[in-house]
Amino acid sequence: MSVQERLLYQDGQLTITMRAVPGPPAVALIGEIDASNSPAVADTLAGCRQGAYIVVDTGELTFIDVSGLRVLVMPTLPPAERWIRLHNVTPYQRRLLRMMGWFYEPRTHHLPA
Image 1: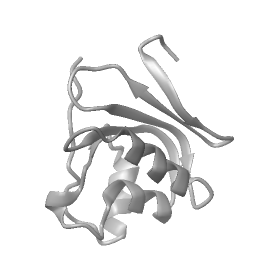
Image 2: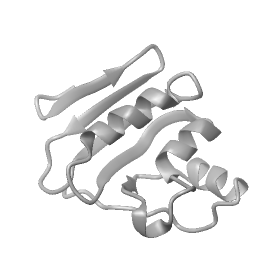
Image 3: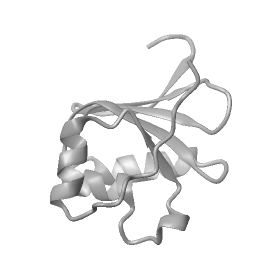
Image 4: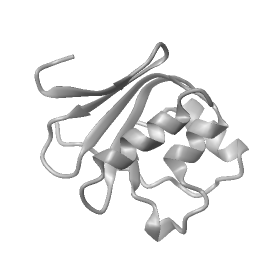
């Protein structure tokens, strides 16, 4: 972890860090999300929310189940109320979203270089 990142959560499967970037909070998920840690992911992300949305980088997730997808996609909320913007979504994650019937394009965000 670089000096520009802050550890927010860690268990045996997953690490969540916040990156120091201009704009909305930028959070990276590294590892695996399943039913055992998805409530902690939801709580951690909610704790990062400071404005209209946060940016969540999913590019280093090696596994995510339906409980994790629900945390990130917020399918029960109308699109205008979803406050997570996904960044670095992998083809595998997009495929899972389509398989779940969530055909809309998740709100994505590009972080400054």
